[in-house]
Length: 368
Ligand code: TTP
Ligand code: MG
Image (cartoon, rainbow, N blue to C red; front, side, top):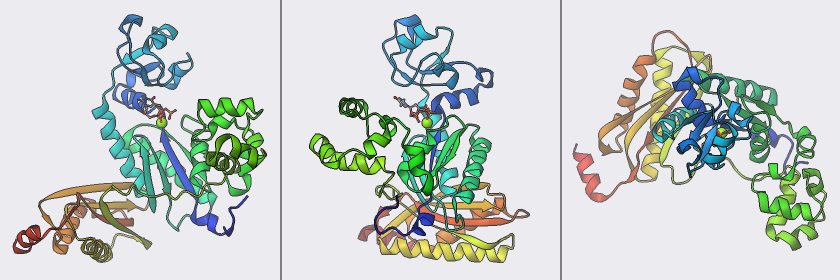
């Protein structure tokens, strides 16, 4: 059911993808040690032969078959599968992979929102006009992450964040689930209420006491009853059970960067066109920088080739500045490794590591 006042054509604009890495920490460990592929791998604290006191961070899908899962006491995991490969958490390694993954995803997005170390929402640009094209895009994303980071992910495509999120978890691992607006109810209704984000163990239990266990039952439940039991959250739950979600995909506000990108009307490797486009984007970034009274230290270039492979390069300059020339020159330097052959589909320019310009700083940078 479309939201009130929401024209059907608006769905196009709201095609939303949710991408979630599969058994993230464990997949990265397996990538590092291919001999572990196919084995039950548990990442977490030391099991100490069954007497360890910590918990499981995550585990490979092979380990999940033994009943092991995130947050399970490591001692229980050991009991369930003593022959599993137990590895300590190597956060530094996963954080690096996460940055790489997010860069790939951002390259495919017009709007982007990272929500955890291994998941993000994205809204594709206007070139993706329907759900078929969004499904193709999702496949490209999966390929690109596999190629650049050597791990698999699952993608959900839906008319809003809620549906995309539930869809990405629907066929894990290495899944792709596309839910068109007209299929939302058919998709959601048979699911258990616990599949709805925000409905945890306690709420699931309370709903059960009211005779509600499926999303369909929740969707059809009397709103007054839900309100009296759960307050405002009751209304929200009913809306979600009907597939409605009004949340926007957007960057967290504290992420300080400014970027612009543009897709060429026709893929091109003509340096005049590419440089021209980069200059225009740099000027736009610069305009926004001045408007917000920011200085930057890092310049970022994004390029996407005709086969959708996407690369991001950044360079940090030695001084805080807001100089347009520094942006243009750095972008050109960063572009040099990509010139000569392949056609560009999209280029983007960004500045990051921003800070507010103060008068003293203004004097220093203006004289440099
Ligand atoms: P998740 O995406 O929840 O789980 P996952 O990627 O391991 O597996 P899935 O295929 O089901 O998505 O979490 C991402 C990472 O966060 C996970 O690899 C490890 C870490 N994590 C913990 O350390 N503790 C936890 O309880 C959970 C849920 C995750
Ligand atoms: Mg995950």
